[in-house]
Length: 299
Image 1 (tube, rainbow, N blue to C red):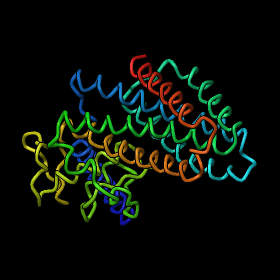
Image 2: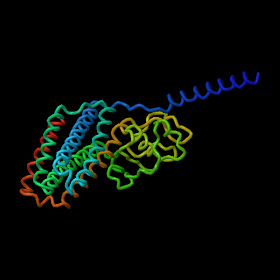
Image 3: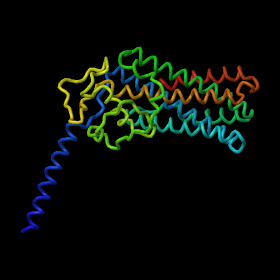
Image 4: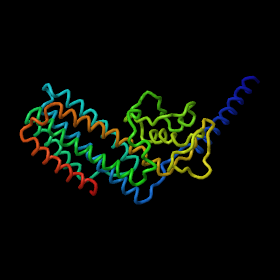
C-alpha cells in the first residue's frame, strides 16, 4: 500500500513539475524576432563582410606563421592569430544563427590572405608587422564605420553602451547555459558581459536584462511590447524587438575592433615602420583591403 502511494505521489509530482516546466518554457523562452527588410539587408551585409575580414586575417597570420613560426617573432604572431581565431569562430556562429551566407569570394581570400602573409614575412619581422599594421588599421576603421552606421540609424538605442569602457570585458559573472535559466537568476545582471565563448542568444538575453528589469525604467528608445509577462525574479519575458538582434552585435564589433587596434599598436611597437618601402607597402595593402571589403559586402 505504501509503495503504491509513493508511486502515485511521484507520478503526481512529475506531472506537476512537467506541466509547470512546459508552461515556463512556453511563457519565457524567446525566439529572435524578425527584422524588417532594410535592417535584415544591412545586418546581412555587415556580418558577411566582417566574417570575410576575420577569415582573411586568419589566413594572413597563417602565412606569416608558415615563414616566421620558428623564429623569435613566432609567439607574438601566434598570440595575435589566436585572437583572430576567436573572432572568426564567433562570426561563424552568428552567421549560422542569422542564416547569412558567407561571401562567395572566400576561396580567393583564402589564397590571397595566405600569400600576403607569407610574402610580407619573407621581408622579415618588420615586413610582417607592417602588413599587420596595414590590415588591422583597415579592419578597425571598417568596424568604426559600422558602429557609426548603427548609432546614426538609432542613436537612442546605442549611445549609452556602444562605446562603454572596460566593464564590457568582465567575464567573472556566471553565464547560464540554457537561455531560460536567465529568468530564474536571483540577481539581475548589472553590466553587459561580453565573452567570445558565450552563445549569441545568451549574450542577447543578458544585455536585454539591462532594460527589462521591473525595478528600473527601460532605456530610452527601447520600447517593450504590449503587456509584458513578468517573472517573479523581476525580469520580463518579452524583449525589445529590434534590440534583440542588433544590440549585441555592436558590442561584439566594439570588442573585436579593440583587439584589432591592439594588434595595430603591437605592429608599430615591433618596428613595422622600419620595413622596406613601409608607406608604399601600407598603401597598397590597404587599397586591397578596401577592394575586398567592397566586394565581400555585395557578393
